[in-house]
Length: 294
Image 1 (cartoon, rainbow, N blue to C red):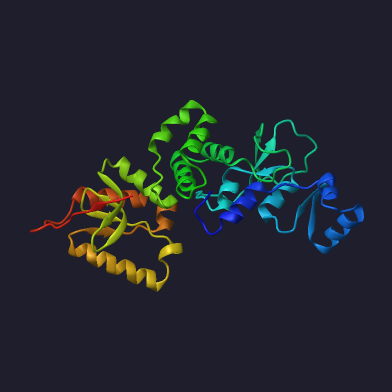
Image 2: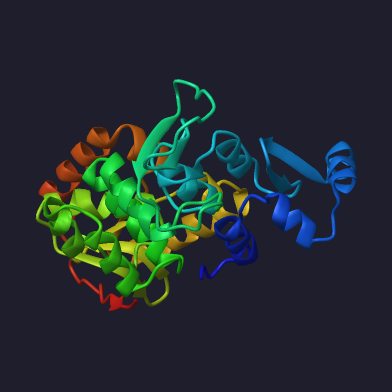
């Protein structure tokens, strides 16, 4: 499971299910008890004969009201796995299901023979990842898979299981995966650099500087900055001191921001191409000795 403080919350999301009359009777609730629990807000009625507890995640409740399970990019985003865009809900529906409530036009419905229990509110994680690969461009799909792998939601065996659910045309993506990427933006930048034919070292530890995201062609440090980890002044002060230490060793540091990586990637790619093509400034005595690390 994910190496996060919210691992328990992730498990709760993945294990969530609706409750029917038999479940409620086993819990000791009579019809009057169920009605009282609904009135008090402790129990929520999703649709005819199906209920959920009030602490169920809102995205799961919305899926349950429509008779589906939260899946694809919507489930992954709820779990904290990187997806590029997840504004409109993606729900999984059991193939052959009828008499479902009317859905909003924004809902993307995926009809599948599900691997999840009948009354689950969340899709099977491997199934959701496979569907997310279908629903995203290849680069974004790779970033999603690497995010899930790096955070511990899946291991190498589970990744193989994801590709077993996909047509053969997706298999080449498997060889491009690198779970060392610590964010979706790192994955996207690594793929940009790969397209430029650079020599790329990932998660490099440099004496006197610390660990950096990439060292390109032995001289260019690239750090993928995000508001989550680099917005405060303390973080910026630390970053600038690291950049100064790297400069003293002869490195050039570039920090593309997440917003540009995600929404204007062509601009980032152009800037990286230009910087790399010009190469490093001449050095009299180079002391660049990166210490590669995982």
